[in-house]
Length: 252
Ligand SMILES: Nc1ncnc2c1ncn2[C@@H]1O[C@H](COP(=O)(O)OP(=O)(O)OP(=O)(O)O)[C@@H](O)[C@H]1O
Ligand code: SF4
Image (cartoon, rainbow, N blue to C red):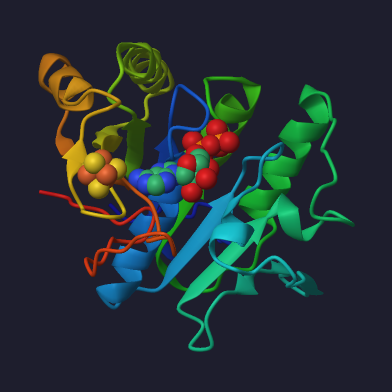
């Protein structure tokens, strides 16, 4: 679904907008958002990532872009290009902080103003996909983000959960949120679905398994796949087996 730019603004040439949401913190929303962007780039698409997680911007670190700076042009902020070919661009509050560990201690209205600026004042140029990484939960920031993006007709939201009942319960609330604000749900991804031993590659379901898939079935939304919990192979591993890198995905 194409983004319908009614005012010819900075999202005028962004063809698809996809939000990544999770009800609970730390379930791997930014990891999945990054992996989706990288997968789309591998498929030859031009991708932007908008990190509206104002209090915990982690995407610059994940894409090794922490020391980059945002500049101004006539059209607004120029996003940071992550690769030399300029196929992935990124905007995050992380680029506006003096020090990477500075905390953003803002009340709602200031956060909302920042989100509006992020949505309207970044000169993305032409993009096939804009992936929007959000903070956990269903707070003011989510309502502001959805409201600001609504004129551009976002294609919908990918919901991320871990398999445990408590995280799945939070995603259920996220589904209700999407319904209330009229945001289509593209599907559910189950992250950390089994831990892959970095030594022998054996997969153990220490976080249980299947909660996300079951929720998708019950709610009538697509189950997009699961991503195992992977660790880098450590030096203490004596086995010659290669472990995948963190965040590697196994979509079905
Ligand atoms: N499948 C995975 N395998 C290994 N590590 C993972 C996986 N998914 C996430 N992680 C790690 O878990 C941590 C939390 O992930 P991430 O920052 O993506 O979660 P989040 O839901 O965006 O967190 P927040 O609530 O802070 O926004 C990170 O250190 C990340 O590298
Ligand atoms: S190699 Fe060791 S840590 Fe890994 S699964 Fe086997 S017993 Fe467990």
